Length: 255
Image 1: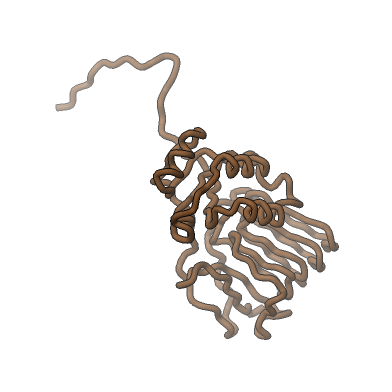
Image 2: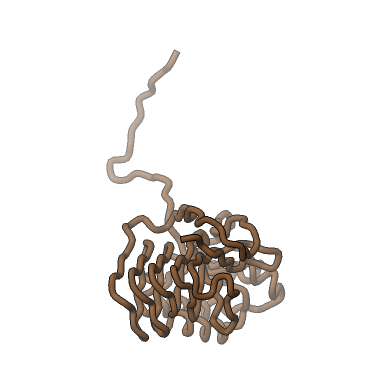
């Protein structure tokens, strides 16, 4: 038999569990001078890329690459805030690193999870039907559609959504999206999909000849020529894990 008990609830507040979307920084080196240089190269021409995003600093990669490295946490936090990131939590550090982080007000987050690429086959060179794009959990708004050609020096960023470009992306132009990028024309500039770490994002183009392609921070430049099976042809780019880390996979498309 059920029994109902009388209870009092606070009139001025409630306590509830909540989920907060976070950006994760996977730190691979304690060399902050090099980190500053690479941040400037990656985000220097995009001052509004981050919008005071909450950040968790993941030190697990650093423990693997440089297990005995000292880390100036105050300088690291200052650098990140310069790019409008808001460090809130840290995970994976050694005892000294976690103590530094705690002294700066960061919260230990050992249970925080970081999105990884899903298993996928190796690089494919045989023509195959276009697979359905993987579901992207991050973009929620409708795709940003660009109808005009993008000239050298122009940059388009689809924050929190996919990007669709109906005209040529010329050399020197840059298209960026937190989700997928679709270019229904020649792609000859730079294309950066999954810009905030979405490893499920993909890049599609009817004529794949980019200066740079990147998904979730893994990139490839035109200095390494694309295979003849995909260069200048309809193709897609996706991210797949491998024994040596995540890698870009390029598949020809049948159109």
